[in-house]
Length: 503
Image 1 (spheres, one colour):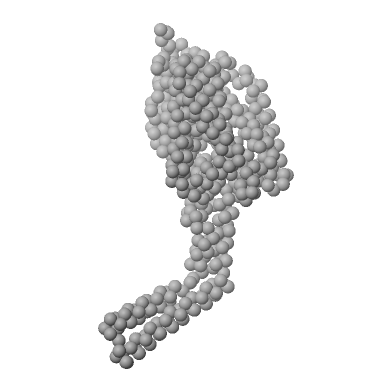
Image 2: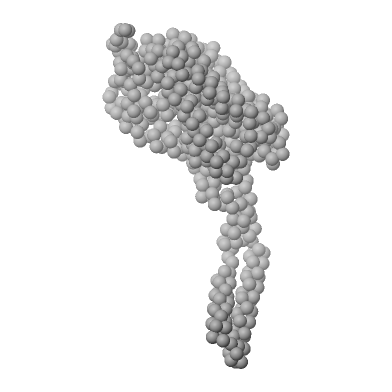
């Protein structure tokens, strides 16, 4: 039985991260991140049209992948406080640091908001402009004059019909040959003709009605979604996501660091209470981010499980990156006095549980869409069953993303050996890269070639370039922020519980 650890044996100000020990890693990541980002955007400016448009997909892929890891860091921080978790205290600073990178990705995504890349990615922007233009054409003076002329003809036709029915009724009445039933029938015809005339007179077209009719005729689906899919609201949501997600992790990390500095217990209460209130905001914001950025790549497609699917991948792979980062830090002499194999065991169990949860959500989404067989829903999978994408999904997502890590983590022993667990974590991260790639890139060829090609030749090189560029910036900023505070919350009241974790 191991000896009981006490916080009295730890430094009062915690354990500082000496970034000079990883200066080479920081330097390489900064050079790669900054240099390749600059190169990517220089090429983006000078390459011809279709290739330039395809690069928007490359940048979106890279930004979204690393954003999912940061979102997972926010989630684990919130969950840690909301559940009053004791085990995770010694690794919470890593969660906070990973989550605090979220503003970086909103800043890196800003070029995608420009009209060129924006319209290449989200076709509904151009489709909406066409719809609005169609409405303007319908409300033009010439179209209004023609519509009113057509209306006048319909009124005249209704009046002519009414006159004919009345004349027939008067003729039958004059000759007194009509039976009671025929007279009743004629009376009903007169009433119907009068009703049609009233409807015709009341349907005089206005410019506003014609504009609405023109928009509806141009694109029924987009017209019905106009309350959500419009430019002003879309940009407002972008700012809202940035403020909500960035604000959540800013407050939690700030309170955590202030508690380290002052030992004030009130910050502990604020973090617990705040996290319970922040969780619904976090869930709603992340759900709508992936709806706006990923589902809307094809605005006619929808899935009510989409937010949960992306959340499952984020939680799983943020835990994977936390395991990998923890092992790397311990290999350089950090956190050895506070982190034990029991912490690895719990982190491994959480990663394992989300492997299963991700597979459950992924299969449920596929199965329900396949079973319902609704055209607007099945198109997502039909696109990804074309060319080599079907073999890609079976090999990497079904087998690689679920069956292999599931089988690999069944044994308890595996989850208590750091380097073995880290190897599985890195494997999961690779599968997550391929998952995000599978979500975004199959939309590129059909969108940019009007359905003629599935693949843009040479575009994969820009996918790799964007990924390495954003990855370099992520590593540099992560290491820089680690050095800003203790590597673990040294004044947390649950620290001793975490040090002596047994599970």
